[in-house]
Length: 154
Image 1: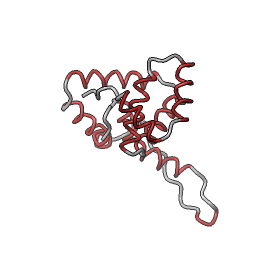
Image 2: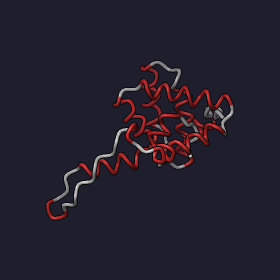
Image 3: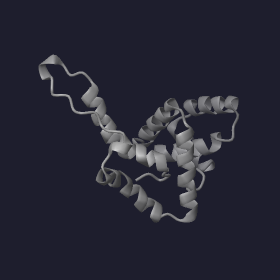
Image 4: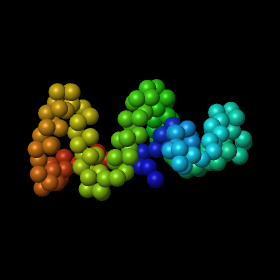
């Protein structure tokens, strides 16, 4: 499960299989394998109460099990997600997928690098990225040891 949950991100991730099915249903198939077109998925308002419940139950359980600080973070993430443009949301989804496929060591490095870069100016970030790309694996491990990632919020 995600370490840093956000309300809309969880909803979006819950809906990804449905979106994938919709994309596959609307993509033209080769003539030799033409399958009957599936009906497009309905808007939220047209979902049955059971379908809505199936989508929201995991989020409700996570919310109910969260402490006040976690709930505030989830709400803030949800509000931020709503304010993002579609391009920003796509970029966030790609980053999440990339992060999920990293090794534990790569994730620790990413957290440490992000923690250091978040307060830098754009020019300083560019310089740090360049410096990072020039480092060997051992140098990166040493850098992470000297610049540990920020504490994980809980």
